[in-house]
Length: 153
Image (cartoon, rainbow, N blue to C red; front, side):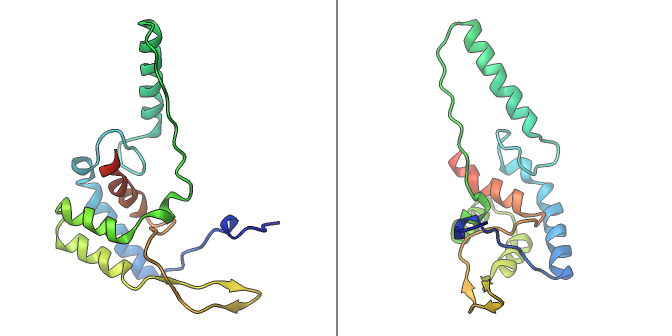
């Protein structure tokens, strides 16, 4: 049984119009994402795969072993990563990379006045405003997450 609030996962309920619009924006962003996000990130970017990162890490370890060099490895697990994307920071990044008004305005519209409600024992809470997170299952979310992380890489 789930006894911790942190163990629950929210679901995103959106209409078909929203889903089509996000798919269109995701396709537009896929066209330029390689210019914005470095090759070290592979999440959701067409033509890239996590296997590449595994091969690079393995090659580095083999090279260090061959030359008898010490190496340190750090693995970071970004728990609930999509939930921690600040809208304010995300939109600052989008403006900084100069994506254009269509994409930026579309995203602002999609994330403006976002809110959630909790359903506990069939009772629905009041709306709770959301100032962070990208939507789970949205085709645009992995790309937005990569752009959000890029300044930290």
